[in-house]
Image (cartoon, rainbow, N blue to C red; front, side, top):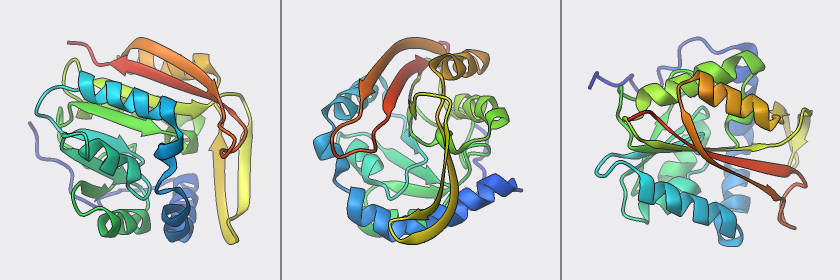
Length: 224
């Protein structure tokens, strides 16, 4: 296994990635206060995450890619697996470390993960690839594959569609961030191009407490 890239070594961020990072820095504390318990009311998400844990390569850490304030990472750790949360926003990482001292949290970009080759036995990316530019999706999934062991599962969730939703204000804070909805065929094609084998897909409507969108979950694996 190669030495992992150091924490905070983000390299050069595109203008859009930098805007995303600053926006999530701005809302980090509010995000944690509002959404720390969101999995309590998301039975489908919990079931898929539980399946991911069961399918994970035994003994290897499970990565939460785009972990935000760390609540999903902590949920994974509570299921008996070593969990590592990775997020572009240093303030999100700081919030996560304060709130959840058990898991490990690292600052890093989906395009340049602070992880060794084959370090993780599974990974989840819940609504994190929606902040990537169209030409960044495949490289990000290829980077996820690099960090995963053979026969390791990856669970990805996105909002379905072709819309790009821009926010200038979020929970009373000024931000500058885009949310890119994805057609199913775009995500499936990108996973295939990155070398993943798709095993299952599921669509659901939003819960009453969520932003009203159609959501897609795809469970894929690296080749064995």
